[in-house]
Figure 1 (cartoon, helix red, strand yellow):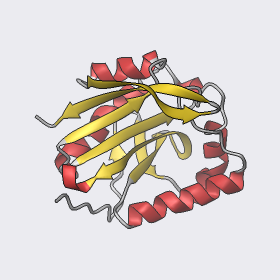
Figure 2 (figure 1 turned 90 degrees about the vertical axis):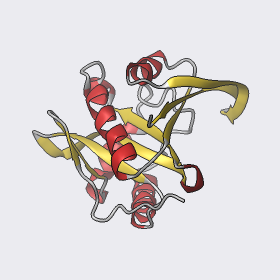
Figure 3 (figure 1 turned 30 degrees about the vertical axis):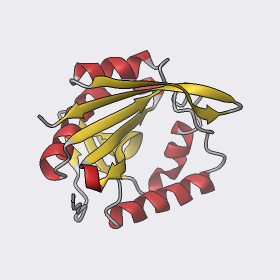
Figure 4 (figure 1 turned 120 degrees about the horizontal axis):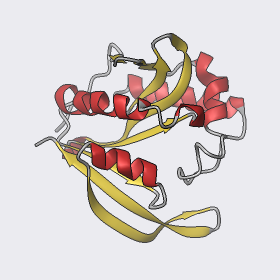
Length: 183
């Protein structure tokens, strides 16, 4: 079975980005991200209701990192590593199956600059080489064409299309599942 160890926290650098641990100083910006109508339009969960809710969320995430259950990075620009512009994570980690789900969000003013495309290959590499994952999954809203395009760019293949498998905001929604194998 897969064994994870996120100590010390694995920061990741790219040409323009520093992926670091989310901390309580990120609460206000993370609140803005998780309430931005454009940023959450395909996330299919309720927007954050308060900064205090986000502070609790950060505390929960960091406890799960400490307990080696999940990993979440703040996406920051190297020129301003204190300012969170998005997040990228491995969650729903299935230790017995060596599989994790990748998820990411970015402030809309940073869209279409290649930043997610810069972060994803480094995070995938970390998942396969350091975490020893066998496969990485992504669950997207079928209307999220940009996310689909990014996933396909990095070799993710569509595994499934689920009809009305997710209930949110008073209606049943579809899901698309993409995956990438280490091989």
